[in-house]
Image 1 (cartoon, rainbow, N blue to C red):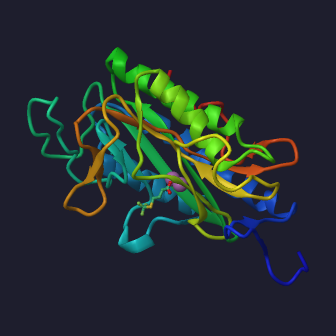
Image 2: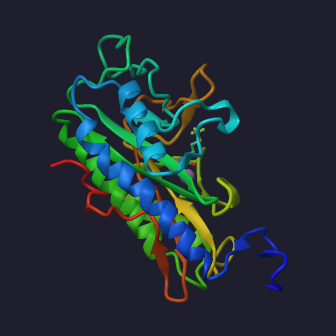
Amino acid sequence: MDGSKPDVTPEGIRIYAPEDFEGMRRAGRVAAEILDEVAPLVRVGATTAEIDAAIAQMVTDKGTVSATIGYRGYQHASCISVNHVVCHGIPGSEIPKSKYEKKKRGDDVLVDGDILNIDVTVILDGWYGDSSRMYIAGSPKPFALRLIDVTHEALMRGIAAAKPGATFGDIGHAIQVYAEGQNCSVVRDFCGHGLGTAFHEPPNVLHYGRPGTGATLRPGMFFTIEPMINLGRYETKTLSDGWTAVTRDGTMSAQFEHSIGITEEGAEIFTLSPAGKFHPTWG
Ligand code: MF3
Ligand code: CO
Ligand code: CO
């Protein structure tokens, strides 16, 4: 790098400088703190609107800016994805009913047994911190808790595969082999992404793949890994609101997301929980 223009690989993946890690640490830490602090608000009877309002306040109080408010017309400080919602659930909108539920919900109130992903992205001094975790309301079914454990482990196996010389296919493969080995499926329609001084940059980080395929990882690459894992089939569909993605078969979906940076040795996680509550967020 000559000091004037950023170093970019032939695949268009930006290589950040060693001093850029500090900006990502600071942004990632705020995202993680918010996900820690929101945990006590997630309970039976809470609404996704009030959870999002609390997050919006925390984003401001910490001196950061929400990356999602105003992003492609999105108007909220978080995505809150309940049960069979795969991602991009809109806070305050009616929680969609899957065919496995008896009656229409009609509102955004959390009920006993709901599992939900909360995804927050903040901007601090131009750096993006993007992370999500799973939360529960009341007492979920054992199969739902198992899905959450499998999804967390899938993310951590993907991160373990992220080191210089490995490829993006190696990361996807590590996630896919594990999740499918647990009789779950990996969502194809959404992926992780490069980030740093922008929200979404190359590459697309697929959560499935073949070893040795795709771009080779190098120190200074910053990206997310954010597998969405389903209990049933992997197909999704997007509801008429243009955002909410649900499993086509109505089975539950879970997701965890970290923002990471590739180092000489492996990967540094920028969005670790200061309180040690990445998973589980409850208890
Ligand atoms: N945070 C999400 C991600 O992991 C993106 C949300 S975009 C929004 O990439 F507009 F839906 F908020
Ligand atoms: Co992301
Ligand atoms: Co996210």
